[in-house]
Image (cartoon, rainbow, N blue to C red; front, side):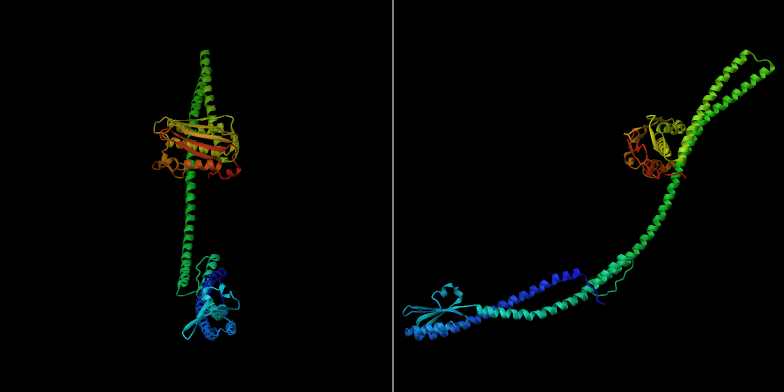
Length: 504
């Protein structure tokens, strides 16, 4: 089974191999032609000189006897030679010159193509013979020799080309084809791909290296898959633990809110109970006096004044209790439903702050709300109260030193026509500059030794960005307090309400 070689590799081989071979042939032919040219020129010059010397010997007697016809006959006979273009005879005795075929034929020839021979008789110089020579025969024979050499080299060149192609296919093409097939198979089906090729050369080492690489790659892939599976399980466990911690943090904030509301309700309820008991005792006392006939106008008048005062105190306490219960009910319902609602932001924040008055009062701190009373928003009210509770409790835990009469302000205002700007600021100790960029990270806290988890502000960040589709930033300087600035749309996009963290 033949292995098809890549076409591009053939092209590269031809481009790289054919020109050097052709240049070699041309160089060899050029050198051979030069040598042959020198040889032919030397032989032709020798032959022409012998011919000229023989003609000069034939001209001795005609020149000596002034036989013009004989001289012209000799010159005409010289033109029959294929390499003789013209001939000129100079007579030293008479000074005459005869030229064939025309008088000025020698004037257009270069000096190296003119052959001169002295005509001597009895040791005396009687004349000179100048012969104009041609190179046509030399060129003809040289061309014949050249093409003979080229034609003789063509079979050798073709044989060498075929041998080179066979060697190329055997030593380079076959291992490359196997290597390419193995690479393509590895691309289709990653795994332990072994290329069945062995040779004691560089390509054999490449094939062996590829086989080792595929084995190592498969081992690494299996290890990565195992590590990925373990990482997914660890991530799932971590997410479950994080959800549990977040739920615990939410329940803690809810517990603080319930504790505060319970304490706030306990005071007016206690006053109401006391007033009711006192009023019941007074009614029983007046009834007894009336039954015994000892009731006087002064006693009845004092009873009416005391009863009116007691009833007024009871009504005020019951109204306070009702307001607290209604506030807690609204907050609890909002947290339970945790869906899109349209509500007055000021009223909602007032209800949330009421639930925080007890812990703030216990710490000697205050919290208040300010903003336009008619600002309506449409979002998750549960997200709003979780954000405010976490920001307020975080300030209470971290911003103020023990015994410091701190203040937390929750301020809001419209930001254009479609957005709201909400600020929660305190006058506490501030946040160190190295920590300001990390306060929204999960599990970041400076009071881990006190049991803090570091999830409060991370919950704020998630609620603002997910539930409200907004943004939150922190500004702080040590000793000058902290401001948390929140921007969100007055009507939260529906797609973000689906991402609101739910309580279990």
